[in-house]
Amino acid sequence: MLIIFSEDVIDVNILWDFDGTILDTYPVYTKLFKQVLNSDVDEQAIFVQLKISFQTAYAYFRMTPDQIRTFHQLIREYPSRGFKPFPSVEKVLVSADKNVIMTHNNRVDLVRILRQYGLENYFAEMVTSDNGFPKKPDPAAYIYLDEYQGFDLAIGDRTLDIIPAKKLGKKTCLFQNDAPGADFYINSYDEFFDRVCL
Image (cartoon, rainbow, N blue to C red; front, side, top):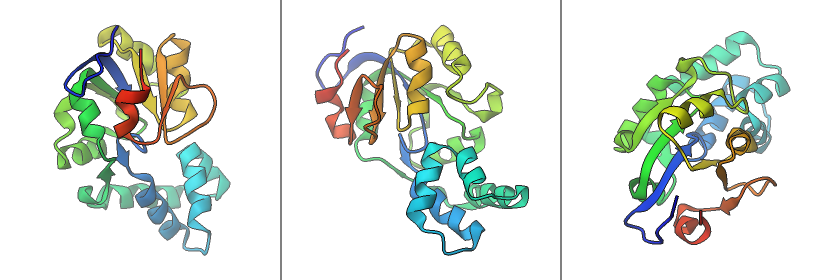
């Protein structure tokens, strides 16, 4: 495994998280979550809980099953163009030898949003909630992707994105998160070629 320090090609296979890593989805999720709560809860408090996990946010704000269903329906109906890719993420995607995704998102929404920005075809495989694997940090989906596609580096915005990769002995990168445990940290994808060295 070798990264050639050029923005033309890097000989590395990358496993990506989706929400908050490839696409800046959390501001939209926060807005829709607040809409469902129909209260004066501070958006930053919602954002913090959502970034831990949706399940954490549901429990923290004591959402009912009906509210959770409404929240997911609002996400499904939200225009794809409202979710924005992080600047320069495509530069890393196009440079990698191979990309795969492991996300808790569903396939329909994932593909709909990736297709909006022409990013769908960068991925050799996409594992979603529809595949039935246990949720991160359980390593089952990562084991599957490593066996069938192979990956050298996992990139995510939350600690739970990197824990499974660490269990497999892979290198890890946290995006816009300085929590301990990752091999590399970047705040923007323009930093990738300077800071990530395998």
